[in-house]
Image (cartoon, rainbow, N blue to C red; front, side, top):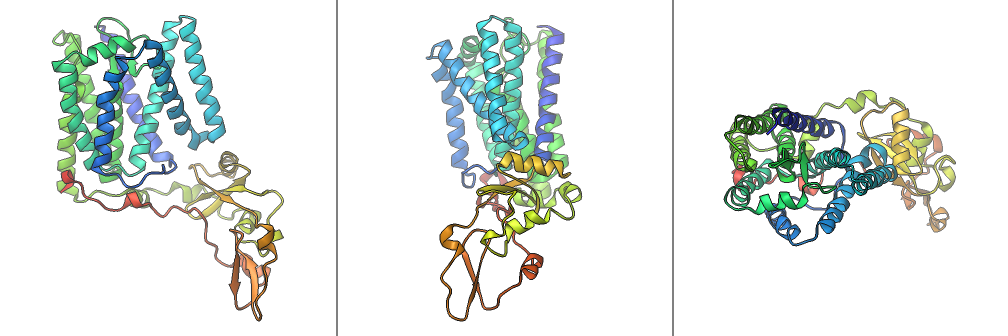
Amino acid sequence: MSTAALVGLNCCVAVITLAGLAYFGRVRMPRPPVGRYELADVAVVFAVVVAAPLLYLELPRTAVAVVFGLVLCAALQFTLAPLTGGGRAWAVALVSVAATAGCAFADRSLAVVVLTDVLLATAVVGVANMWAQSGMRSAHAAWFAGALACYDLVATGLTSVMDRFAAQVMGLPFAPLLAVTRGDPPVALGLGDLLLLVLFPLVALKAFGRAAGLLAAGIGVAVSGAVSLLFALGALTGAFPLLTALGPLIVVQHVLWVRSRGAERTVAEWRASAPRAAAATAPADPDPALLRALDPPDAQGLPAALPEDGWLAVLDGRVVGGGTSPGLARRDAGRRGCTPVPLAVPVRRASSADEHPEKQPGQDQRVDHHGGPEREAGHASPQKAASAPRSVPGRARGHAHDDEQQGPLGS
């Protein structure tokens, strides 16, 4: 194998791992519609990982390329959506996938490899962050790594499953391989290997702190580099089960951190202890029109600049922008000086039935920011209503999956 190609592969691994950590620290991904992670969820993911190569070996190469193209397109979209907005993310994803497919039809093999590597790296960063930010715990990651270590030993070291799978997808656009060369054997890293290399540092960072995250990232890159060195020296000549070496180290790290730090932090606890750069960069006094949109004195009090079904960008309980779509609301927040990505929440104008509610004797009514009547004994003046404290809809309070739960490995 080429020494330069091996060095390049490990440089790519290090860059992707650092990109995952940077994304984790700067971007808050929307919570997926799932509950709390359980070991059963890890078992399902493991079953999919085991079954996927066997299924792809039975499919035509064109069908395999189409399936992976659709998967990468979706992963690229939800990775970029918190940064650019959903519409632009879809546009970038579709154009990138179309460009890769076009290069394949034009027989531009080098361009196909480069574009596929970029798409794969972006997708891995997004998937790893989604899992880590949506509640995957270090115990879950350790179980997953231990199971994959056993599977990789069987599929790569003891049988020819992964060798045949690599031969099936090598050279295809959207192949699940981070490839540097396409020789025999190729200098490449499998999707499962790369995903675990990026995932565990994020989970360790969330669960135990920055030292644990950086140590996990360093160990992952070191393992990848040691295997590459063995290939460069000629000690290894065929496919090597990288996860068989990496998985036990992940389990050991988890056990040691649990014993030294105790219980893992939840996502909510990690976010509460993270440095709040947003508080310093968010405007001290948001636009009064945006505040009036949250709690208007009457149904006609919504500003004209925020039409029906508009969106507000909210960060740490503060309104920092607004627009007619989530992307425009986040972009407005950026123009106002808010660097972190805020949460976009909808603000709906009151319906006609709510604008003229039937009054009860001796009571006044006003319309809250959700459009429903809110009764109170006294009538608050517009000035007093504007100065009263306001609750922000959609403010993050942690989710059910953030609750403390100790897995079997964490006991």
